[in-house]
Length: 303
Image (cartoon, rainbow, N blue to C red):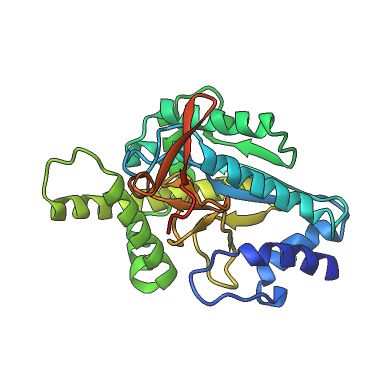
């Protein structure tokens, strides 16, 4: 068990948890068992991470629909974490970024063309930075040449739970209820041009949240079928002992913040954290990389 525990100890400082954390590998039996399958056989540890879907459609939160400094730093962090695993398990590790934007893009109001461009941008970042421990996987890799709508229908029909089943879980399980509230909040924040009242928007987003969760679970089950032995990571907070291991990508005041719902604001000492674009604009200057908006930097002496 020692090698598996050593690998897990490298992940634990970045655990994104929905409750009290634990630095003891024994409190994470699911991850220990999964990692041990690789350490016992001398194989590279395989990790899968659903996420990196697309940028929020709310321009008050992000700089556009393409990856920027937030994604670059996050991918470099994940690649570096895999490289560090080789220090305690010689075969090392590789991580598959399982971009989930296409599976619910129609529900969140992001066009498939933007999701394609975002996913292609991730691949470019990985290639140009030489992030050799990372791979990518998205809906384009399944069901051949069918269009995105047809693929969404097939995956949803094969894997998604019913809305009634989800409603029951929201009422009876606090983790599911917390996820439902978080997704609803994102949908309210990201909806642009809604003609009705605030209460009507909230009702509509609560309904759409069930679809987002159902599609996300369908995507997770499809990933499990494609990568049945992988260690399952999540960008959402996860309780200690959960089947998935929530992982923090960058510093943020909000446990739900991600690079695709925020921008990077760098302090004068180079520390990077995630904030909304409208907050960053009031605290720093815009920095461009390769001719495109990348992130914000605070002036020396800023609070």
